[in-house]
Image (cartoon, rainbow, N blue to C red; front, side, top):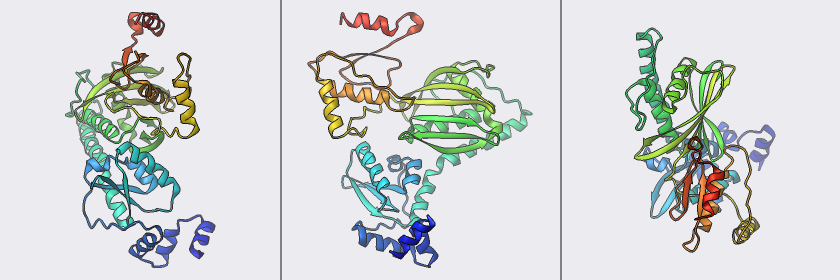
Amino acid sequence: MAVRKEAKEKAAPADDLLYARGIKETDIAEAKSALTKYPIKYLQGVAVPFDVLRDIPEESARHYAIMPLGRHEGFLDIGMLHPEDSASHEALKFIAGRAGLPLRIFIITPTDFQAVLQEYRSLSGEVTKALGEFEKEYEELGGDVKIRREDVGKIVEEAPVTKMMAVILRHAVEGRASDIHIEPTRANLRVRFRVDGVLYTSLLLPIDVHPAVVSRIKVMTNLKIDETRVPQDGRFHTEITGRFIDFRVSTFPTAFGEKVAIRILDPEAGVTTMADLGIEGSNVEKVESALQRPFGLILITGPTGSGKSTTLYALLQKLNEERYNIVSLEDPVEYYIPGVNQSQVRPEIGYEFATGLRHIMRQ
């Protein structure tokens, strides 16, 4: 109780105060295990497979002090530093739903936690290697690195800048990020991933690479490379880990150069359920009641990235029964739902939402 009081007064983690008093981390772990009834797991240098690490993105793992440890006997094993933290347990509810497996929770030590964090660091390592190649090429060409328009149906990873972008895109997809933000500052180029609605800094690159990175993105999206004064929008798709992923790109001029936001759309990722979205209790009843009505309108509003499309897909999936003829008009089609007739509008050829609505009435 005295430690908790002191921790509250100093606004410091109780664990840090115990370490300062010379108490071993294994003793603290055993005490937590006795209080929470969660068993302890010592990793003893055993590496966590990368496909298991993907169950919890690095940013979430670091923020909530939780780690995926492995899949055993039909369970996803989770290591926790702070089993008393309610926010961590709330995050685990979503992780369990997304993984489709029940969880087994273990207490782990800070040493093991840091060891697993190191296994996440492959993003920084791969980008650092590509960055070194870029700097070497930059010096050899006297600061003139030309970006060519090339076939981007599949990312080619030979050129340093191309390799750097390929690594960033792949790690964002594997980490289940919904967006990538590439932002120039006075001192560096910041790369952030949005995971579960929250932006986390994933990389800090030298500001010198900013023009080449933005040019590479513009090549992929067929945007004007020499236009940096006004916002531009585009899209591209490429193959990553055997799947074709769609990317929507938006550039925006800032005081330090162009900022780029990339929305990641994986049509094969699967549709989230209402439970996964956190719609529970009376709210579920209200939504289901509205869906059962023979006619009407459900209006979903919110800022970019707030989950409007994800919510609409969850509602479509709820309605998706053989007795219904479901037709959707979308721009773009973000996820494929078997049984739903999904149509991509194309304003450039005159096929707009109004046109589609008129023809849907004949379907």
